[in-house]
Length: 300
Image: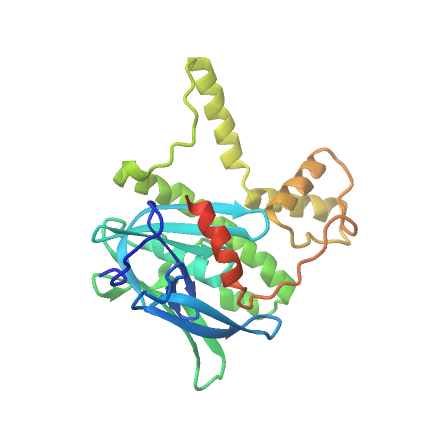
C-alpha cells in the first residue's frame, strides 16, 4: 500500500506528489532516497529536460480531502489529499488537462469510503505509433471504468468532439469541461469528504457575531457559487451571438472571463482585438520541474 518508503515528507501537510512521464514523483526527495532517479523528457520547444526525485509506479490510499487553487502565473491545480496507512500524500495535477479530468471522473465514480489505486501511464503505442498517456484507477481490485461517467446531454464525448474540431475550439472545450468537472467535485465530493473527515475541512468562512451578518454572508456565498466561470462563459457566448455575430468568444483565462462578463453586464464594448490574445498553447508536456514548487506552495 502507498508508495513504499518515503522517509521525510518535508511538510506537516504530507508528501507533495506530481504525475509526470507515466510515474508519480516526489520531487523534493534527494539522492539519498532509495527511490531517487532521473528521467529525460522533451518540452514543447523540443528541448530535452531532466526531471529528478523519488519515482513511484502507483499510489494507493483513501482520499480525505480535495481542493483547487490558482497560481497567478502557472494557473489552476487540483489537489487531492490521501491517507495511506497513516502516511499523508498530496497529489497535485494541473487542471485543463487529461490527467485532471480522469482524476475528477474517478472521484465522481468511486466509493469514497474505500482506498483507490492510482496508476499513471505514458507510452508509445506499437501499432499507431502515437503517445498514450493518462491514469488508470482500481477499487477492490476492479478497474474503475471512466466511460461510465455521464456528464449529461450538454457535453459531447471527446471522440465526437475531435472529429469536426480544430485546436482553438478543442482548447476552449477542454477548459469548459474542466470547469464543469471542478464544479461537480466541489458540489458532490468536497462536501462528502468534509463529512467523512471533519478534521480536514478548511475553515475559510470568518466567524460572524451578528445573526443578520451571517445571513448576508450566506447570501453572498450562494451568489458567488452560482456565478461560476462556466456559467459566465455560457452567458458571454449568448451575448456575443446576439451582439457580435461576426465574432466568437476567444480563449480566455478565468480572470479574463470575469472581466468580459462584467463588461457585457455593463453593456460596454468587448475587447476582441486589443486587450486579450488567443492562446496558442498546445497540450504538450509543460516544464513541471519549474512550476512544481509554486504549485506545492499553494497546497498548504
